[in-house]
Image 1 (spheres, rainbow, N blue to C red):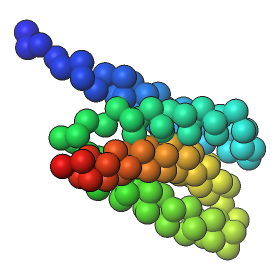
Image 2: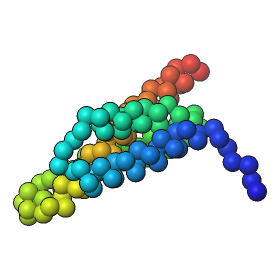
Image 3: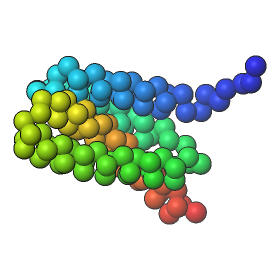
Image 4: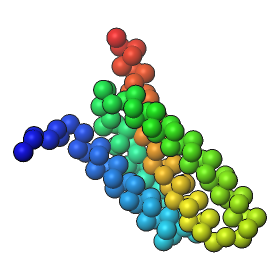
Length: 122
């Protein structure tokens, strides 16, 4: 049995918990945004960004910036489409994407700052 690296275990668990929480809150509580849930998601995003290793920072930043942009564009398109067609599922998807933004924006900022500081040090 191979030995697993525990270098990024905390960040991976925070990431998984944040994704699960974002989806569950988006599905079940899509009409209201709780400041407590928003704070928890932002805190998990900070933890995820902090524990991104230096060797994975480029991949993480590319993936997270892509996810942030696509989530934002999806929210804008879904809100407009749901209003035009009066579709109730638009609120659920829009809330889920909004929760993912709350998770990934702090993670992206922290990882980007860590990368900039490491470049400045060398």
